Image (spheres, one colour):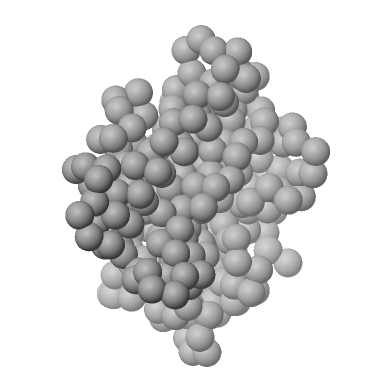
Length: 265
């Protein structure tokens, strides 16, 4: 039986790179690489190959990435081209994905938000709201007409924890974790409670207002991002978790861009 060729998809975020290997539409392998490590001198292509466990597998027939770290853009394009010798595609606000960006400054929309909106529209339908909890928390709207309509950006829980450590004299860094009560009994427990319940409240308030501004009705809410599993229970069943949404969006974007022949220059 002849297997479908592989596609390498890379979501390059501020904290980590999430890489996935697709065979057709099926995500078969994935892994993470620290963004700081990716920015170091050295063979990024080999690191990406190890990250997704390519090993003896033949290299991908194509690679696609969405990056919110400008210093990584050229490194990713060169790494994929040099290591795998395959066509490389990059998602940008000007990519012809058939997803109208109905915002004031389309060129400022993050590539990750674009592929999240594309995946939401194609996988669950429109209208939809995507909540991505990572270094930042982003809320993005897809209208009933399948257009990207903007959203909101907030600090992620890890970013908030780092800010408390860096901007205060005595508070330590506390890893965001699920809290069981709001009244902490020591400093670490107080910070943990604030990070957990504060983030829950922030997301709920923004999503509630977002749904109202979209006109209400049946609007699917999708939860994704590295911290999504931590907050899923607290947010409730109306938040449908899709951990691989961004990678799925990249896979869908590749199908569109490859057909149109749009590659990195």
